[in-house]
Image 1 (cartoon, rainbow, N blue to C red):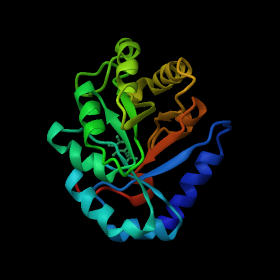
Image 2 (cartoon, rainbow, N blue to C red):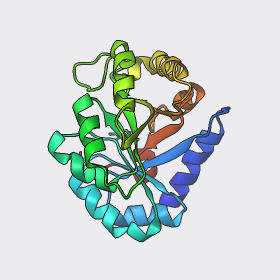
Image 3 (cartoon, rainbow, N blue to C red):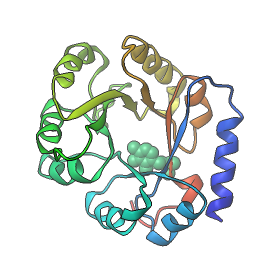
Length: 214
Ligand SMILES: *Cc1c(COP(=O)(O)O)cnc(C)c1O
């Protein structure tokens, strides 16, 4: 079932003309290790998680598989140490303080932690992230942090105008030739996101089915 779903999502990705490399992240939050195992058996390597405690258990279980783990959920500052130790990418950095803690707490034996700045592209009260106009000032500060590597930007747009929002994100990334990652597009809108330049799409439901909880 999951192998089949992965195949469908990949063919949706391939159906869109794009020049950039696109990496599919299987968002496994609120899904069991059995389902993750099925995805791994089907060749999926990149997984996204939102809730720290359940993700740590999963990461430990699959340790020898060399999976790539992406933290994509809200980050409380008392949770940064485990994220810095266990994850390869963090998409949801939305305050300088969080970036600083992740850098300070990244174990020195590991490579730099890859981070994306979350952009509240539609300025929604219910969503977190930097406003577009604050990005220019924060980027140089983030780049100074030694144990994290700023790679690009992430957004969760309002579905009503995602095309415009994806375009704005793409324009933003183009201002930084040294950055290469744009995380946008989910089950419902991944084609549009890829058309606009997404390099990571984050897909949960269309791979794993409805979540067991939210
Ligand atoms: C849950 C989640 C997804 C996956 O959403 P689906 O609609 O299940 O594909 C993607 N990105 C983020 C940030 C999420 O929290």
